[in-house]
Image (cartoon, rainbow, N blue to C red):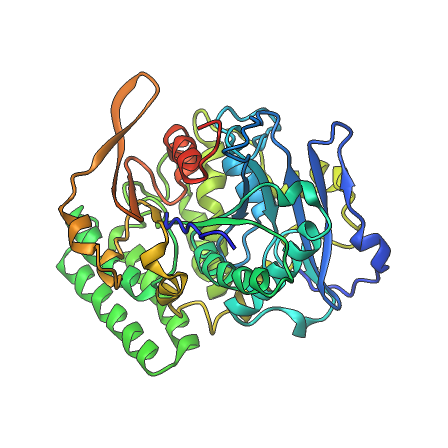
Length: 451
Protein backbone atom coordinates (compact mmCIF):
# COMPACT_ATOMS: atom_id res chain seq x y z
CA UNK A 1 0.00 0.00 0.00
CA UNK A 2 1.06 3.61 -0.42
CA UNK A 3 2.83 5.40 2.41
CA UNK A 4 0.29 6.33 5.07
CA UNK A 5 0.11 9.95 6.12
CA UNK A 6 -1.09 10.33 9.69
CA UNK A 7 -2.08 13.82 10.77
CA UNK A 8 -2.32 14.41 14.49
CA UNK A 9 -4.41 17.34 14.72
CA UNK A 10 -33.03 6.30 25.96
CA UNK A 11 -34.80 3.32 26.78
CA UNK A 12 -33.44 0.10 25.33
CA UNK A 13 -35.68 -1.57 22.85
CA UNK A 14 -35.93 -4.91 21.10
CA UNK A 15 -35.80 -4.23 17.37
CA UNK A 16 -37.49 -6.56 14.92
CA UNK A 17 -36.17 -5.49 11.52
CA UNK A 18 -35.50 -7.62 8.49
CA UNK A 19 -31.92 -7.62 7.25
CA UNK A 20 -33.14 -6.36 3.90
CA UNK A 21 -34.76 -3.26 5.39
CA UNK A 22 -31.88 -2.42 7.69
CA UNK A 23 -29.21 -2.96 5.05
CA UNK A 24 -30.81 -0.94 2.27
CA UNK A 25 -28.83 2.06 1.00
CA UNK A 26 -30.89 5.12 0.21
CA UNK A 27 -29.90 8.25 -1.69
CA UNK A 28 -31.15 11.71 -2.48
CA UNK A 29 -32.59 12.60 -5.87
CA UNK A 30 -29.58 14.72 -6.83
CA UNK A 31 -27.17 11.89 -5.98
CA UNK A 32 -25.26 14.03 -3.48
CA UNK A 33 -26.33 12.03 -0.44
CA UNK A 34 -26.29 8.33 0.43
CA UNK A 35 -27.12 6.72 3.75
CA UNK A 36 -28.00 3.44 5.32
CA UNK A 37 -27.27 0.84 7.97
CA UNK A 38 -24.50 -1.73 8.11
CA UNK A 39 -25.03 -4.77 10.31
CA UNK A 40 -21.50 -4.87 11.71
CA UNK A 41 -22.34 -7.88 13.89
CA UNK A 42 -25.52 -9.91 14.21
CA UNK A 43 -28.14 -7.58 15.73
CA UNK A 44 -25.69 -4.65 15.92
CA UNK A 45 -26.44 -1.90 13.39
CA UNK A 46 -24.30 1.13 12.49
CA UNK A 47 -25.79 4.12 10.65
CA UNK A 48 -23.76 6.11 8.12
CA UNK A 49 -24.38 9.21 6.01
CA UNK A 50 -22.25 10.21 3.00
CA UNK A 51 -22.30 13.62 1.31
CA UNK A 52 -20.78 13.99 -2.16
CA UNK A 53 -19.29 17.44 -2.57
CA UNK A 54 -20.81 19.84 -5.12
CA UNK A 55 -17.47 21.69 -4.98
CA UNK A 56 -15.49 18.72 -6.33
CA UNK A 57 -12.39 19.61 -8.34
CA UNK A 58 -11.06 16.95 -10.71
CA UNK A 59 -7.28 16.80 -10.56
CA UNK A 60 -5.49 13.58 -11.59
CA UNK A 61 -2.43 14.42 -9.48
CA UNK A 62 -4.58 15.29 -6.44
CA UNK A 63 -7.57 12.98 -6.04
CA UNK A 64 -10.64 14.46 -4.34
CA UNK A 65 -10.55 13.22 -0.72
CA UNK A 66 -13.19 11.73 1.58
CA UNK A 67 -13.24 12.68 5.25
CA UNK A 68 -14.58 10.17 7.75
CA UNK A 69 -15.62 12.25 10.78
CA UNK A 70 -15.47 10.52 14.17
CA UNK A 71 -17.29 12.24 17.03
CA UNK A 72 -16.35 11.93 20.68
CA UNK A 73 -18.27 11.18 23.83
CA UNK A 74 -18.15 8.21 23.58
CA UNK A 75 -21.80 8.17 22.59
CA UNK A 76 -22.04 11.50 20.75
CA UNK A 77 -23.49 11.40 17.26
CA UNK A 78 -21.36 12.29 14.27
CA UNK A 79 -24.46 12.25 12.04
CA UNK A 80 -26.04 14.79 14.38
CA UNK A 81 -23.40 16.91 16.15
CA UNK A 82 -20.49 16.77 13.70
CA UNK A 83 -22.82 17.14 10.74
CA UNK A 84 -25.37 19.78 11.72
CA UNK A 85 -23.39 21.55 14.45
CA UNK A 86 -19.89 21.70 13.01
CA UNK A 87 -18.90 20.86 9.42
CA UNK A 88 -21.83 19.52 7.38
CA UNK A 89 -23.62 21.32 4.52
CA UNK A 90 -26.54 22.55 6.70
CA UNK A 91 -26.82 24.02 10.18
CA UNK A 92 -29.49 23.11 12.71
CA UNK A 93 -31.95 25.51 11.04
CA UNK A 94 -31.27 23.61 7.79
CA UNK A 95 -29.65 26.70 6.31
CA UNK A 96 -26.49 26.37 4.18
CA UNK A 97 -23.25 26.52 6.15
CA UNK A 98 -20.66 28.77 4.50
CA UNK A 99 -17.78 26.97 6.18
CA UNK A 100 -18.84 23.40 5.35
CA UNK A 101 -15.93 21.04 4.87
CA UNK A 102 -17.59 19.86 1.65
CA UNK A 103 -15.65 22.71 0.06
CA UNK A 104 -12.54 20.57 0.53
CA UNK A 105 -13.75 16.94 0.57
CA UNK A 106 -16.65 14.52 0.54
CA UNK A 107 -17.93 13.86 4.08
CA UNK A 108 -18.77 10.51 5.65
CA UNK A 109 -20.47 10.65 9.05
CA UNK A 110 -21.09 7.61 11.23
CA UNK A 111 -22.91 7.08 14.49
CA UNK A 112 -20.17 5.17 16.29
CA UNK A 113 -20.01 3.02 18.40
CA UNK A 114 -23.21 1.07 17.83
CA UNK A 115 -25.88 2.53 20.10
CA UNK A 116 -24.87 6.11 19.28
CA UNK A 117 -27.26 8.42 17.41
CA UNK A 118 -29.34 6.36 14.97
CA UNK A 119 -27.14 3.27 15.44
CA UNK A 120 -28.48 0.59 17.74
CA UNK A 121 -28.11 -2.87 19.17
CA UNK A 122 -30.92 -5.37 19.69
CA UNK A 123 -29.41 -6.91 22.83
CA UNK A 124 -27.67 -5.16 25.72
CA UNK A 125 -24.64 -7.45 25.58
CA UNK A 126 -23.77 -6.15 22.09
CA UNK A 127 -22.47 -2.72 23.13
CA UNK A 128 -18.70 -2.46 22.64
CA UNK A 129 -16.51 -2.58 25.74
CA UNK A 130 -13.22 -1.40 24.19
CA UNK A 131 -11.89 1.00 21.58
CA UNK A 132 -10.55 -2.00 19.64
CA UNK A 133 -14.03 -3.52 19.41
CA UNK A 134 -15.34 -0.19 18.10
CA UNK A 135 -12.52 -0.16 15.53
CA UNK A 136 -13.47 -3.65 14.36
CA UNK A 137 -17.07 -2.54 13.81
CA UNK A 138 -15.92 0.56 11.94
CA UNK A 139 -13.64 -1.52 9.73
CA UNK A 140 -16.58 -3.78 8.89
CA UNK A 141 -18.60 -0.70 7.98
CA UNK A 142 -15.81 0.53 5.68
CA UNK A 143 -15.59 -2.87 4.00
CA UNK A 144 -19.29 -2.77 3.25
CA UNK A 145 -19.16 0.75 1.81
CA UNK A 146 -15.89 0.63 -0.14
CA UNK A 147 -15.22 -2.92 -1.31
CA UNK A 148 -17.92 -2.93 -4.02
CA UNK A 149 -17.75 0.76 -4.90
CA UNK A 150 -14.91 1.51 -7.29
CA UNK A 151 -15.80 5.20 -7.36
CA UNK A 152 -15.21 5.52 -3.61
CA UNK A 153 -11.97 3.56 -3.91
CA UNK A 154 -10.52 6.31 -6.14
CA UNK A 155 -10.60 8.85 -3.29
CA UNK A 156 -8.15 8.73 -0.38
CA UNK A 157 -9.94 8.43 2.98
CA UNK A 158 -8.87 10.70 5.82
CA UNK A 159 -10.04 9.80 9.29
CA UNK A 160 -10.61 13.09 11.12
CA UNK A 161 -11.49 12.87 14.79
CA UNK A 162 -12.51 15.15 17.62
CA UNK A 163 -12.23 14.55 21.36
CA UNK A 164 -12.74 10.88 22.33
CA UNK A 165 -13.05 10.20 18.61
CA UNK A 166 -9.25 10.42 18.54
CA UNK A 167 -9.04 7.13 20.42
CA UNK A 168 -11.33 5.53 17.87
CA UNK A 169 -9.28 7.08 15.06
CA UNK A 170 -5.93 5.58 16.03
CA UNK A 171 -7.40 2.13 16.68
CA UNK A 172 -9.42 2.28 13.45
CA UNK A 173 -6.35 3.42 11.52
CA UNK A 174 -4.38 0.39 12.68
CA UNK A 175 -7.32 -1.93 12.06
CA UNK A 176 -7.84 -0.53 8.57
CA UNK A 177 -4.15 -0.90 7.68
CA UNK A 178 -4.26 -4.54 8.76
CA UNK A 179 -7.39 -5.16 6.70
CA UNK A 180 -5.95 -3.40 3.64
CA UNK A 181 -2.71 -5.37 3.80
CA UNK A 182 -4.70 -8.61 4.15
CA UNK A 183 -6.73 -7.74 1.06
CA UNK A 184 -9.97 -7.53 3.05
CA UNK A 185 -10.49 -3.78 2.62
CA UNK A 186 -10.29 -2.02 -0.76
CA UNK A 187 -9.49 1.49 0.32
CA UNK A 188 -6.71 4.03 0.03
CA UNK A 189 -6.10 5.36 3.52
CA UNK A 190 -4.83 8.92 3.19
CA UNK A 191 -4.30 9.69 6.85
CA UNK A 192 -5.58 10.12 10.38
CA UNK A 193 -6.08 13.60 11.84
CA UNK A 194 -6.51 14.08 15.58
CA UNK A 195 -8.09 17.23 16.98
CA UNK A 196 -8.42 17.91 20.74
CA UNK A 197 -8.08 14.18 21.16
CA UNK A 198 -8.49 12.27 24.42
CA UNK A 199 -5.54 10.02 23.59
CA UNK A 200 -3.63 10.70 26.84
CA UNK A 201 -6.20 11.23 29.63
CA UNK A 202 -3.57 11.34 32.36
CA UNK A 203 -1.83 14.30 30.71
CA UNK A 204 -5.13 16.10 30.34
CA UNK A 205 -6.22 15.79 33.98
CA UNK A 206 -2.84 17.03 35.20
CA UNK A 207 -2.97 20.02 32.85
CA UNK A 208 -6.37 21.30 33.99
CA UNK A 209 -5.44 22.59 37.44
CA UNK A 210 -2.34 24.56 36.49
CA UNK A 211 -3.99 26.04 33.40
CA UNK A 212 -7.05 27.22 35.34
CA UNK A 213 -4.80 28.58 38.10
CA UNK A 214 -2.86 30.60 35.50
CA UNK A 215 -6.08 32.23 34.24
CA UNK A 216 -7.30 32.81 37.83
CA UNK A 217 -10.21 30.37 37.69
CA UNK A 218 -8.68 28.33 40.52
CA UNK A 219 -6.83 29.51 43.61
CA UNK A 220 -4.17 27.49 45.42
CA UNK A 221 -6.81 25.49 47.28
CA UNK A 222 -8.57 24.60 44.04
CA UNK A 223 -5.26 23.72 42.40
CA UNK A 224 -4.32 21.46 45.30
CA UNK A 225 -7.65 19.65 45.16
CA UNK A 226 -7.40 19.26 41.39
CA UNK A 227 -3.86 17.88 41.53
CA UNK A 228 -4.78 15.54 44.39
CA UNK A 229 -7.56 13.95 42.34
CA UNK A 230 -5.27 13.81 39.29
CA UNK A 231 -2.70 11.93 41.38
CA UNK A 232 -5.42 9.52 42.46
CA UNK A 233 -6.30 8.94 38.81
CA UNK A 234 -2.63 8.38 37.98
CA UNK A 235 -2.32 5.69 40.65
CA UNK A 236 -5.55 4.02 39.59
CA UNK A 237 -4.26 3.87 36.01
CA UNK A 238 -0.98 2.37 37.25
CA UNK A 239 -2.97 -0.26 39.19
CA UNK A 240 -5.17 -1.08 36.21
CA UNK A 241 -8.30 0.18 37.98
CA UNK A 242 -9.71 1.87 34.89
CA UNK A 243 -13.37 2.02 35.92
CA UNK A 244 -12.32 3.63 39.21
CA UNK A 245 -10.21 6.14 37.25
CA UNK A 246 -13.25 7.06 35.17
CA UNK A 247 -15.26 7.60 38.37
CA UNK A 248 -12.51 9.78 39.87
CA UNK A 249 -12.40 11.77 36.64
CA UNK A 250 -16.04 12.73 37.18
CA UNK A 251 -15.15 13.78 40.77
CA UNK A 252 -12.34 15.94 39.37
CA UNK A 253 -14.70 17.71 36.98
CA UNK A 254 -17.18 18.35 39.81
CA UNK A 255 -14.39 19.71 42.02
CA UNK A 256 -13.26 22.07 39.26
CA UNK A 257 -16.84 23.22 38.73
CA UNK A 258 -17.20 24.10 42.38
CA UNK A 259 -13.81 25.76 42.85
CA UNK A 260 -14.01 27.80 39.62
CA UNK A 261 -17.64 28.92 40.00
CA UNK A 262 -18.57 26.72 37.04
CA UNK A 263 -16.00 27.35 34.36
CA UNK A 264 -17.00 25.85 31.04
CA UNK A 265 -15.07 22.64 30.49
CA UNK A 266 -15.11 23.07 26.71
CA UNK A 267 -13.89 26.67 26.72
CA UNK A 268 -12.06 27.73 29.87
CA UNK A 269 -12.42 31.42 28.97
CA UNK A 270 -16.17 31.21 29.56
CA UNK A 271 -18.65 30.50 32.34
CA UNK A 272 -21.39 27.97 31.92
CA UNK A 273 -23.96 30.74 32.41
CA UNK A 274 -22.22 33.17 30.08
CA UNK A 275 -23.04 33.85 26.42
CA UNK A 276 -22.57 32.08 24.12
CA UNK A 277 -22.52 29.27 26.69
CA UNK A 278 -25.59 29.97 28.76
CA UNK A 279 -26.65 27.73 31.62
CA UNK A 280 -29.11 28.69 34.32
CA UNK A 281 -28.35 27.91 37.94
CA UNK A 282 -31.22 25.45 38.00
CA UNK A 283 -29.72 23.58 35.07
CA UNK A 284 -26.42 23.27 36.94
CA UNK A 285 -28.22 21.75 39.89
CA UNK A 286 -30.03 19.32 37.62
CA UNK A 287 -26.75 18.37 35.99
CA UNK A 288 -25.05 17.53 39.27
CA UNK A 289 -27.97 15.25 40.13
CA UNK A 290 -27.50 13.15 36.97
CA UNK A 291 -25.59 9.88 36.85
CA UNK A 292 -21.88 10.35 36.28
CA UNK A 293 -22.05 9.12 32.68
CA UNK A 294 -25.21 10.98 31.74
CA UNK A 295 -23.70 14.11 33.27
CA UNK A 296 -20.70 13.96 30.95
CA UNK A 297 -22.78 13.50 27.84
CA UNK A 298 -25.07 16.36 28.87
CA UNK A 299 -22.07 18.66 29.37
CA UNK A 300 -20.69 17.64 25.98
CA UNK A 301 -23.90 18.49 24.10
CA UNK A 302 -24.76 21.57 26.17
CA UNK A 303 -21.83 23.59 24.86
CA UNK A 304 -22.97 23.37 21.26
CA UNK A 305 -26.65 23.59 22.15
CA UNK A 306 -26.09 26.83 24.02
CA UNK A 307 -24.36 28.36 21.00
CA UNK A 308 -27.68 28.19 19.21
CA UNK A 309 -29.48 30.15 21.94
CA UNK A 310 -26.82 32.87 22.02
CA UNK A 311 -27.00 36.10 19.99
CA UNK A 312 -26.28 35.06 16.42
CA UNK A 313 -26.86 31.39 17.21
CA UNK A 314 -28.97 29.05 15.12
CA UNK A 315 -31.73 28.66 17.68
CA UNK A 316 -32.73 25.09 16.81
CA UNK A 317 -32.90 22.09 19.13
CA UNK A 318 -30.75 19.27 17.79
CA UNK A 319 -32.70 16.49 19.47
CA UNK A 320 -35.98 17.72 18.00
CA UNK A 321 -34.35 18.08 14.58
CA UNK A 322 -32.84 14.58 14.58
CA UNK A 323 -35.98 12.92 15.93
CA UNK A 324 -38.20 14.97 13.64
CA UNK A 325 -37.63 16.08 10.07
CA UNK A 326 -34.21 14.40 9.65
CA UNK A 327 -35.43 11.08 11.01
CA UNK A 328 -38.35 11.22 8.59
CA UNK A 329 -36.16 12.10 5.61
CA UNK A 330 -33.68 9.30 6.34
CA UNK A 331 -36.55 6.84 6.88
CA UNK A 332 -35.17 5.67 10.22
CA UNK A 333 -37.20 2.71 11.57
CA UNK A 334 -40.07 3.86 13.78
CA UNK A 335 -38.84 2.16 16.95
CA UNK A 336 -35.45 3.91 16.87
CA UNK A 337 -34.91 7.27 18.55
CA UNK A 338 -31.81 9.34 17.90
CA UNK A 339 -29.43 9.04 20.87
CA UNK A 340 -31.70 6.60 22.65
CA UNK A 341 -28.85 4.29 23.67
CA UNK A 342 -26.03 6.83 24.11
CA UNK A 343 -25.81 6.54 27.90
CA UNK A 344 -25.30 2.79 27.52
CA UNK A 345 -22.50 3.38 25.00
CA UNK A 346 -20.59 5.47 27.53
CA UNK A 347 -21.20 3.22 30.53
CA UNK A 348 -20.09 0.12 28.63
CA UNK A 349 -16.82 1.85 27.72
CA UNK A 350 -16.14 3.00 31.29
CA UNK A 351 -13.32 0.48 31.59
CA UNK A 352 -11.59 1.86 28.49
CA UNK A 353 -12.39 5.56 28.86
CA UNK A 354 -9.24 6.51 30.77
CA UNK A 355 -6.89 4.12 28.97
CA UNK A 356 -4.29 6.04 26.92
CA UNK A 357 -3.88 5.61 23.17
CA UNK A 358 -0.77 7.77 22.91
CA UNK A 359 1.53 4.81 22.14
CA UNK A 360 -0.49 3.75 19.11
CA UNK A 361 0.97 6.65 17.17
CA UNK A 362 4.37 4.93 17.19
CA UNK A 363 2.85 1.88 15.48
CA UNK A 364 2.29 4.04 12.41
CA UNK A 365 6.10 4.02 11.97
CA UNK A 366 6.71 7.64 12.86
CA UNK A 367 9.98 7.87 10.94
CA UNK A 368 8.11 7.45 7.65
CA UNK A 369 4.81 9.19 8.36
CA UNK A 370 3.59 12.76 8.50
CA UNK A 371 1.98 13.64 11.81
CA UNK A 372 -0.26 16.62 12.36
CA UNK A 373 -1.82 17.62 15.66
CA UNK A 374 -4.90 19.79 15.20
CA UNK A 375 -5.25 20.93 18.79
CA UNK A 376 -5.79 23.94 21.03
CA UNK A 377 -4.50 22.83 24.43
CA UNK A 378 -2.52 19.63 24.96
CA UNK A 379 1.04 19.31 23.71
CA UNK A 380 2.03 15.65 23.56
CA UNK A 381 5.24 16.20 21.64
CA UNK A 382 7.44 15.28 24.62
CA UNK A 383 5.94 11.77 24.53
CA UNK A 384 7.19 11.10 20.99
CA UNK A 385 10.08 8.77 20.29
CA UNK A 386 11.29 10.55 17.18
CA UNK A 387 14.81 11.34 16.04
CA UNK A 388 13.76 14.68 14.52
CA UNK A 389 12.15 16.02 17.70
CA UNK A 390 14.93 18.42 18.70
CA UNK A 391 15.17 19.92 15.22
CA UNK A 392 11.41 20.33 15.18
CA UNK A 393 11.52 22.20 18.48
CA UNK A 394 14.14 24.62 17.13
CA UNK A 395 11.94 25.66 14.19
CA UNK A 396 9.97 28.91 14.20
CA UNK A 397 6.19 28.85 14.01
CA UNK A 398 4.30 30.19 10.99
CA UNK A 399 1.25 32.38 11.73
CA UNK A 400 -2.15 31.48 10.26
CA UNK A 401 -4.60 33.98 8.77
CA UNK A 402 -7.89 33.80 6.92
CA UNK A 403 -8.57 35.68 3.69
CA UNK A 404 -7.68 39.36 3.86
CA UNK A 405 -8.00 39.36 7.65
CA UNK A 406 -4.52 39.80 9.12
CA UNK A 407 -5.60 38.99 12.66
CA UNK A 408 -3.56 36.02 13.84
CA UNK A 409 -5.80 32.95 13.95
CA UNK A 410 -3.18 30.44 14.97
CA UNK A 411 0.24 28.99 14.26
CA UNK A 412 1.73 25.94 12.64
CA UNK A 413 5.18 24.41 12.80
CA UNK A 414 6.67 21.52 10.86
CA UNK A 415 9.83 19.53 10.46
CA UNK A 416 9.92 16.84 7.79
CA UNK A 417 7.07 14.50 8.64
CA UNK A 418 5.82 16.22 11.80
CA UNK A 419 3.30 19.07 11.84
CA UNK A 420 1.59 20.85 14.71
CA UNK A 421 -1.28 23.36 14.70
CA UNK A 422 -2.20 25.83 17.42
CA UNK A 423 -5.65 27.39 16.94
CA UNK A 424 -6.32 30.64 18.81
CA UNK A 425 -9.66 31.89 20.09
CA UNK A 426 -11.21 28.44 20.03
CA UNK A 427 -12.59 26.10 22.63
CA UNK A 428 -12.98 22.37 22.24
CA UNK A 429 -15.06 22.61 19.04
CA UNK A 430 -12.63 24.34 16.70
CA UNK A 431 -14.83 24.25 13.55
CA UNK A 432 -17.52 26.13 15.50
CA UNK A 433 -15.27 28.77 17.07
CA UNK A 434 -12.84 29.23 14.17
CA UNK A 435 -14.61 27.97 11.03
CA UNK A 436 -12.41 29.78 8.51
CA UNK A 437 -9.05 28.61 9.81
CA UNK A 438 -10.45 25.10 10.39
CA UNK A 439 -11.58 24.89 6.78
CA UNK A 440 -8.19 26.04 5.49
CA UNK A 441 -6.45 23.62 7.80
CA UNK A 442 -8.45 20.59 6.69
CA UNK A 443 -7.77 21.51 3.06
CA UNK A 444 -4.05 21.34 3.79
CA UNK A 445 -4.41 18.15 5.82
CA UNK A 446 -6.21 16.27 3.04
CA UNK A 447 -4.17 17.73 0.16
CA UNK A 448 -7.48 18.79 -1.33
CA UNK A 449 -7.25 20.07 -4.90
CA UNK A 450 -9.57 22.87 -3.72
CA UNK A 451 -7.12 23.90 -0.97
